[in-house]
Length: 248
Image (tube, rainbow, N blue to C red):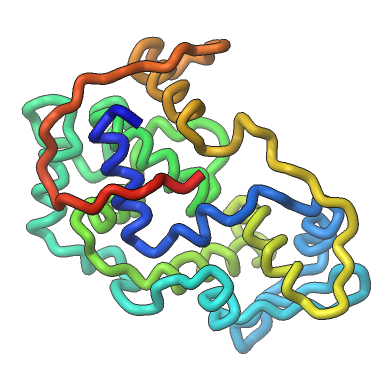
């Protein structure tokens, strides 16, 4: 990508240790995934359990961490994010000279933080529909990612996974490709037909440029065949990171 601000967002994401979780192969097994959620629950010892094709599936926090090589050290409570970094983030994220609130509208933030916010909303918290408002938790995670604060990503992500299979939880079901990776590691389990994720739902250079066009030019309205956009590189506060290829 030619936009240095967008490149740095992906470099920051890679530096968190989420590369294997967010960048695992975009292949899923629809029937097995449906059966997994239909039969899944959380045991008293914290394991996520289910049955798929009459095979028992048990997913522990340790298995989750090992499969995606997730960091297991760092903050587990987002209220512990250093206040000075939150203060700096309120200025850094803002599109104007005014600080943004930690619970603000997404349009108050620079485009690169639009994108970071939406990646977190769609892939970590699996929020569906409109998400024009920034929540406190997502703001805190954006701050952690931007300023290289260590997070126990395994604890956070596995906690979301537990909520997905907890009856009565408002957490949307998701992690489709990640769950299928876990299922493919279960001995003797046959998953059946595999499908490739729709290309428009895979984060790559083309979809990122399209995202920029939608949010920067049309205020979030849908467009068709949006051209690639070249943005003027801007100086950015924060930590400089080594250039590396963005995950898709």
